[in-house]
Length: 223
Image (cartoon, rainbow, N blue to C red; front, side, top):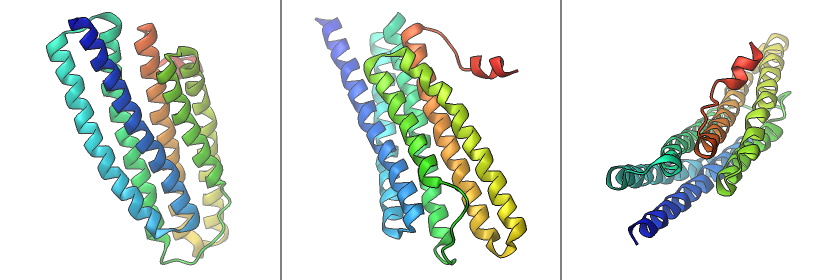
């Protein structure tokens, strides 16, 4: 009976994590939409959402640490709880990066609207897809799907480098647009960091399932 109760608590922990993940996903999508539409109301929503994410993070951490202390889990259950704690932190930072995009949006509202040579909608969708896929890997316990998320990270890095180069070129050609272009560089970097957190989540899913630390394998393969 005690083990049944423990596994019920693990299921509840997973449900809470997925609920927090939904908030983080919503934060990313709302922040990108706010930036694209210059929507002050959506910026306010992202800020409210960040507060909810922070509260959820504290509650989830408390539950996870209590399970570690009381149940002293072993093997795969221990790895799962440790992975949840790390994923929880990455989701909170996704909320932080989304809030940063909302702040960038508010910063440009006093400037005229210009069309920048960057497809921020595509970058935002790609980052959001990485988060969705990493969480699906968690839900399904699918290490191969988690592997695919880590492989996706190269593309968002490429998009960020291209955005950075194109926006610096714009500043050279049209110095009067420096403020908007610099703002765009920061937004692209925020989206790249969100994707990094999605990749981190996938790495933690792999750790849970396989018991393997693969954090540095991709970078080592590139050296």
